[in-house]
Amino acid sequence: MEPDKEIKNQDTEPMTIETVEPIGKRILIRKDEDKKETKGGIKLPDNIEIPTITGRIVAVSAEVENMPDMPLKKYDKVLFNPKGAIPVDFEGSNRLFVIEIESIVAVFRKS
Image 1 (cartoon, rainbow, N blue to C red):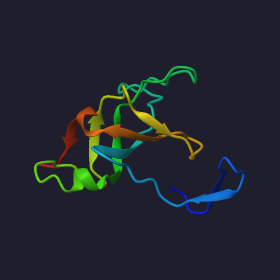
Image 2 (tube, rainbow, N blue to C red; image 1 turned 90 degrees about the vertical axis):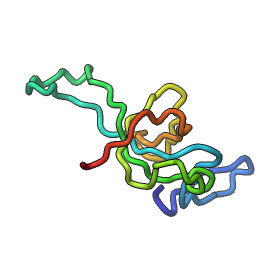
Image 3 (cartoon, helix red, strand yellow; image 1 turned 135 degrees about the vertical axis):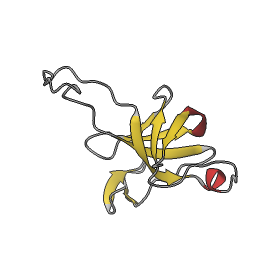
């Protein structure tokens, strides 16, 4: 997602990545940080984390965007099944994932 990030293609020529656009019935999610503390306030050791399965939608494919019955849009906070999530690794923290819309199990809405 960072502009002017260079990678090498097969011919070793620099190539610039400007955006990641999911294709098909997929969305791009920025996973929330894993928790390092329990709800009760107990700090966890560095090697133990509570896995997080929530995140924010960063991009929606054109196919999903054009589905009138699909209530997903950019910046929605979602709960998702991480099985089958494809990591997008050009951010050091590796928190971007492309997932199929069937992996979204809930959308958080303010009431």
